[in-house]
Length: 79
Image (cartoon, rainbow, N blue to C red; front, side):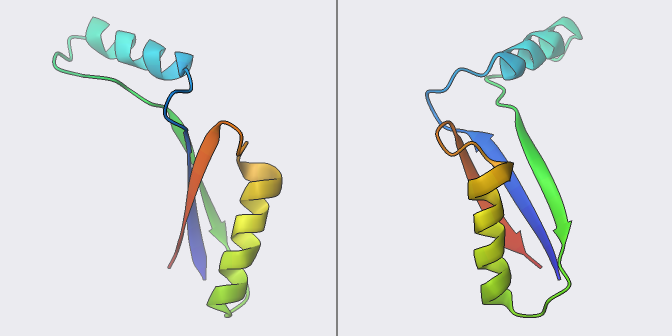
């Protein structure tokens, strides 16, 4: 079983890296780029077959390590 966790900054949290990317894209001639928000993606392979258990474990991983839930949101997709 495979899972993808996407972590993004919450709305209202300043994103200096996203702003730098936005500025760099403009400098490279990419017009029409609005706001850029930077995030991170984790692809995790799981050995079990219990989807409910996997989802609970993945959420615990996010809460304990992969995401700073004070300033970040996360989503979990299991395939």
